Length: 347
Ligand code: OKP
Ligand code: ZN
Image (cartoon, rainbow, N blue to C red):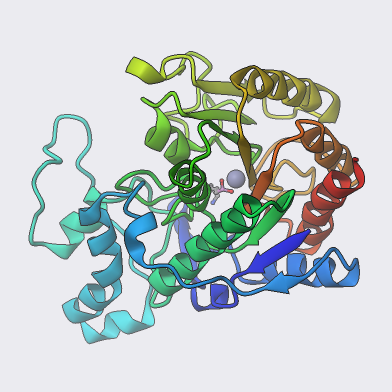
């Protein structure tokens, strides 16, 4: 399988994230992608290439222009507040919840930082915009290979993307790589695109982007948001809105779920994808369902990821894999590559 690797991913390296009242070292670290890259090379999974250059127009198909403008300038604005800020990551401290207005665009940087985010665990750094842009280009390049007839391609990038919505960042995500790829497939003429999110955390950003649409079906298997991040979305009764009703499917599972039960959800998800008659599949490939993950609660084991790849291949669809979460750094490479290898070995 061809991999499109984001060589610029390392320029996004947050120092700390807010967790239970403390700033703790980031879980979403550059080594994650490097472990996956090394495993791909060791197991000779296929060619590894750099992304093609795209202008921002494909990003603007899923993100609002005021959000993209904000991201593009956020670091400079942060440093302009105080030159000492160059040494620390930017965090939001105010949010326009519920009854607050969110149609206004305050001049204050701090106010806009909160307007465009939804948690305090996602540091924005000097390299965030550059890394995220190159990463979205990886997803677009992987999609273009699939459009040219490749059976599958893998966008290996960080920061991840599935929590980023039309106009918000959060959950370590800034640009929604999977959504950008799915929209690019649509724009190139694929009538129906399925997005399957198998990260431990609900893909609230992707859901938000496609919630009222019938041409992109979103399915997510994840930890029950009653107890798991992102808490406020990902429930089974979220089925889509308007013309998109019936094209959003959430399959939450309790913390502690093991592979056998998880796989039943996967088979159910694939049934729904088959019924949708998609022309292409985008997989948000999170590996934080792994038993050793430090911030998640399922108990999948390394060999299980081969089975997942085989099951995904049986959908018989041109497939774009997009790297999302997975924080057991030493194992994330074997787990990710197991999915891809299982996929390739399944005829
Ligand atoms: C991103 B992705 C740990 C608390 C969890 C947010 C988790 C984001 C996960 N400090 N914070 O879906 O893997
Ligand atoms: Zn996750």
